[in-house]
Image (cartoon, rainbow, N blue to C red; front, side, top):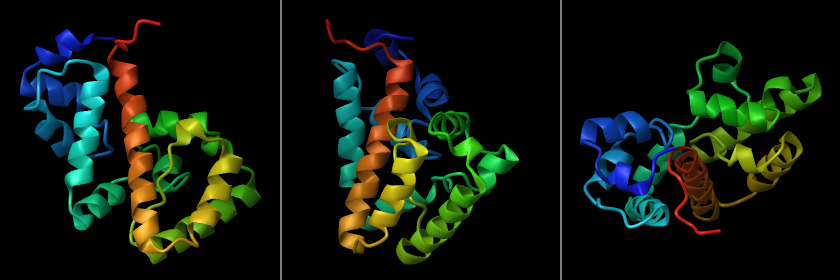
Length: 173
């Protein structure tokens, strides 16, 4: 783990090497945030990333969502997920689904993608497979103007957890 002063001293190239996938397959986010250094704290860094994501137009937010893989989808089965996504999906139990759950998840993922135009995104580290299946089914009923902000909030949760695996917390607990 590095502390915030080490983060602040990184070159752009090193910063991208370390933080390039905190938002799944969207290195433009850490590239844009790098110029906001120095960060006072890890929370400041997280806030800068969240503000950048929130400032994107709807099409940019949808683009971020389209960079995410389907949960328990083809990439997980073929081993082509990013390291971070593989760990997150495995931790949620998505690598070892029962056949009925796998079929349900595939069907719901397809319906979701057809309805919204991007994969279902949820912070797998904060959910188990039952909660993921339940939320996927529930969120399918949302209207786009409700679902997009929910999905983006999940991206920000994923990002924060990924950052916290890299940068030491500055809290004095």
